[in-house]
Structure formats: C-alpha cells, structure tokens
Image (cartoon, rainbow over all chains, first blue to last red):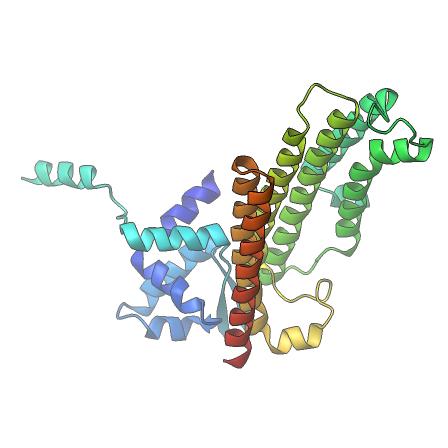
Length: 104
Length: 208
C-alpha cells in the first residue's frame, strides 16, 4: 500500500508528470531535465527523487552524471494520462476551502 | 544463495497447492472423459502443470539477474512478477483441468471460458510490467544489438506491453461475455490490430 501511495503522490504533480513525458523519448541526465523547466535545479532534483522513490524512474550513474530512465508499467502510464486529464491537486479542494475559511 | 531461497515464497506456495490438488485428485483420475488413459498420462494430468511451474521457478533462481544496479533490479522485478503470474496461471488451469476430468458437476463450456479468462488475466499482468524490462545478458539473444539500440529496444518492449494488456483485456472480456464464433471474430480482429500496431511501432522506433 505504501508503494501505491508513493506512486499516486508522484503522479499527482504536473511537473513530475512532465518529467515522465520527457523520459518517454529516451534516458536523460538530471541537467538536461532541469533545463526543460523554469524552476530551480534543486526543485527538479527533488521531483526526480520523488519519482525515483516511487520506482517510476531508475537512475544510473554514467561517469560524473546521473542518467534517468523511465520505469513505468502500462497501468502507471494509464494513470499518468488520467492524472493529466483530471488534473488532481496535492491538497483536496475541501481542505483548501476550510483553510481559506480559517484564514478569513 | 540456494535454489529454494531463490524461489519466492508465494511461488512455492502456489506450486505446493498445485501438487496438493494433483495428489487429492489422483485417485479419481483419469475420470469419465478419458477412461482408456495410461498410468503415465494420469501422472502427467495430476502433476505436469505444477512441475512446469516448478521448473520455471528453478530456472529463474539459477539463471536470474543478480547485478545490483537500479535498471537490473527493475528487470529482476519484472521476471519475478512474470514467474508468479505463470505459477498462478498454471495453478488455475490445473484446478480447472482436474475438476473437469474428475467429473465435477460443472457445465462444460464454463471451465473453457474460465481458462480463457485466466489466459487474458495472465497476459494483462505480464504485459503490464514488460515495459520495465531492460536488455540483459540473461534475457536477450542479441545482447550486443540490444545494448547498442537500448532505447529502441525499450520502446519496442513498451509497445509490446501495451499490446499484451489490450489483447489480455480483450480475451478476458470476450471469453467471459461472448459465445464461441463471436469470441473467434473478436480475437482475430484484436490480433490483426496488434500486428498492425507492432509493425507501425517497430517502423517508427527503428527509423528514428
């Protein structure tokens, strides 16, 4: 169950889904992945760590660099497409509304 | 590492249940459908499928992937899942064959349908994990070619995984819901689509 939680958590973020989409075209180094996003390298690195922890990508050291390779199953790919479609957010809408009420 | 330690506990359990089922059914075999069967045939009917599953598990334990880097571990996970799926499929089929042969009160099309559904589910489980497989010396006959075209190799396996899942779902649903000639037509269409899909995908992968 913990593994499933990690996978859903990893797929809930649009940046991480975009990283998975980039990796469909072949393995990439963390530097190349980071260049594809406006966010800081450290942020992308954190996203990669989450994906790696969920077993959705595998990392392989290649000299000085680390190469990331897609490691999703068919159903995880389907879940990624579904997540792109429904656009889930990390915090449920009800909880966000409650937080807004408390702030107000 | 001993061979018994190399065989996963769940696989050992499934194989054990298979042998147990064969042992329990043995006195009633060959049953009303095969009254002329010889002793060797009866032994085969009772224990062949669990024995095939056992040989597969031993093969995996002996020749399995042992290198510790992440991609190899991912491949080893795929092989473990496929082995368990095969053991489950063999056990399911074995129970169906035994219950049919000993003359259990089940209408005859039902076990055939159940076997097809099992096959479909087996294809879904194995196809689901196929995209995680990497070229490895133990698995690929053309290792050098697979390594030099690693990405194309993986894209091909990803496509194969998708097709396997689609065909598996089609087989399972068709077997559970349709009648004989309809199943035949649906499977032919699914296989034709798969062949077209594979050709298109291979052309795209190997030419880019």
